[in-house]
Image 1: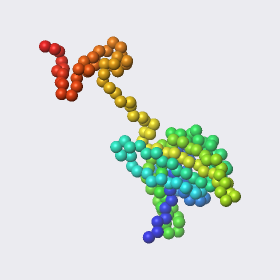
Image 2: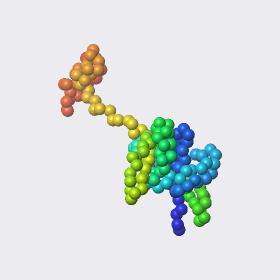
Image 3: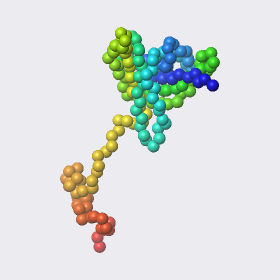
Image 4: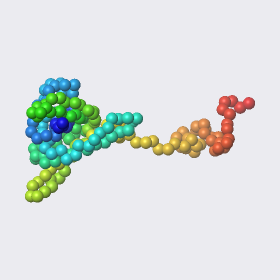
Length: 185
């Protein structure tokens, strides 16, 4: 059995962008993501389509999609639209084709958020200039940082609030020591 599949990506920027990993325009039917039939633009040569996983237990994922061999016009449009791409919803799916390469179904597999769109400087390969565009997408909150370690010492608390003495007895507590809480008596 031969698998006839391609990747499709919809970026909800202004205006929305619909790309697929093949060459030339591809008409797609309306579905849960596409409110009306649309034409996906061929993304030239997709150099990198990373595997992605489902978000589990708060593990955020960052992926880069790279298109190579794009035209000057595509590069110009990418540079103009780059500001509206940041933060846009990105739907990634698989287009399934029948034996005659007609669209059979589109299965949307992941929802991401676009973080950046960058254009590489033109590189010459074998006498031909090649340009690449990289879209960085994330799933989950990748801007979040871990909080610094907190210590419950009197000095730390007094830096935060000079007249708060709640931790004034912490220095006397160590392993094997217990302190009865509540009023003394």
